[in-house]
Image (cartoon, rainbow, N blue to C red):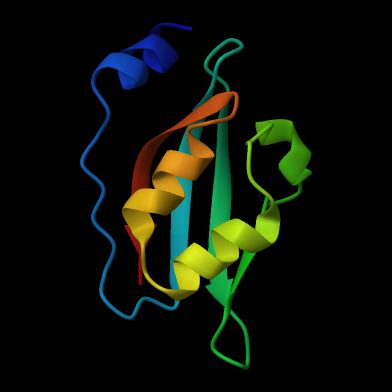
Length: 98
């Protein structure tokens, strides 16, 4: 739980490439600092779709629905996406994009 607490008090700077087609958030869970990833990938229509990489999104216990995060991602409002993810039981530790 040490890394999780560090992220609460000192959140990382998040930078996402402009017009990215894939964005992967590394998250640290509140129980035992478990690491999981949330992936936003663009579909054929150019809209982002959120994936839990084998885990149900309910595991993150976010206060927002999947479509809300996808809509903010479509508008490239990544700071808001991070804020939304951080409402759950995991905190964003880092991001990679391409």
